Length: 468
Image 1 (cartoon, rainbow, N blue to C red):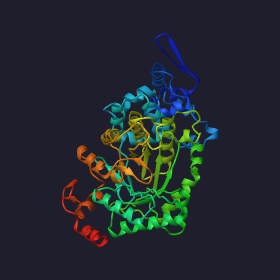
Image 2 (cartoon, rainbow, N blue to C red):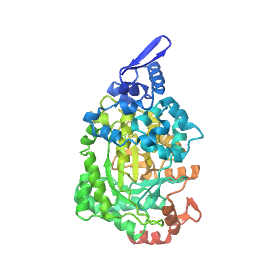
Image 3 (cartoon, one colour):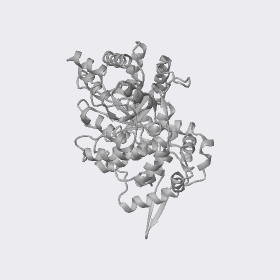
Image 4 (spheres, one colour):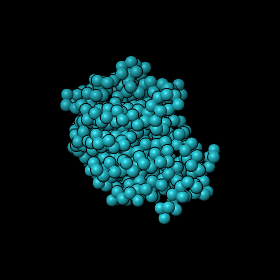
């Protein structure tokens, strides 16, 4: 089915839904690389106009990636909740935008709607939104998850403490870990990207992190960001696995390039749940969100598995995969893949806001690795801007990297200090369980979770003296 819109005397025709979505997407280098971007600003506007008039229900009848050849499409369609979709089933993409922005729509309504939305619907409406629209709607969405702490509460900003080291040196990791804790970082997860990706090394890192968490009774969780098959082997060998990590994509082919499929993710989730390592909370429930997923615009194109779809739509489909497994954490590593996919700071900022919006609307506790590679046309000022915008939008967590410079992965991200800035300027606080721990450890001042104590905490000062 073709779609069209006339601008002046020119009639712009789009052969199918995937072409319409691609041409309507705000400019980014990855879509230009794939040869699917709008060929002019006029064509982009025409596509956005045609998309705005499109009934939302179209996405239930026309797949951008064929149902017969893609298990992600089958997952999206087969798990769609028609009853949840009913309140907006009569709307077009444009009127859906207006509905989302209206004062009559609140977080409760959006939570009830989430199972009725497909990723493609959220991607479509994001394409006709300004930055402020993406921020305003995402801020309404509230999604909470639990393992040893509660992530995603209103007025909270959590952090992943990322103590990577280029040789996995325990002393180097421990130094970064302590630095992060002393800056109030780590309530989302203490997560290490290992330099050595073998089961023995991963197990050693897991044991080290578990020892720190247990010794200091920290209400957080650990994760070593290795391949899911390595984590399964670690579980079989009795390693202390809290969260199962995996990079995921929005097509079956992308996930195959990562060495995974949906069945493998389901197996890993079941294995992690069997360990019952989540905390028992005051209401009697146990923390059961055991998965941690990372995504990023451009991964499908990089794997030649994008099916001529634009990278933002495929990214949203990755959130459909994530949603199925009830993760504790999901984050877009927004500028990590490089300028071939997001050329400069402007494109990275737009992508970060889109990713956060789509994931939140689909019902995920969403974070962002606000980052860029050193060959991109971006700098730390661009990251400051995106951090501030995402903080205003209610992002669930961001990264805490020593000095904002990851010496193992060789990219630029956000630092412990950046998270403190966002909390202070926007009036945000850590997860409640972690906030109480910070105060009890005398890392932060009583009743002031965004203020670090003037002196080194006594218990940790003794640790440093012994280490010296």
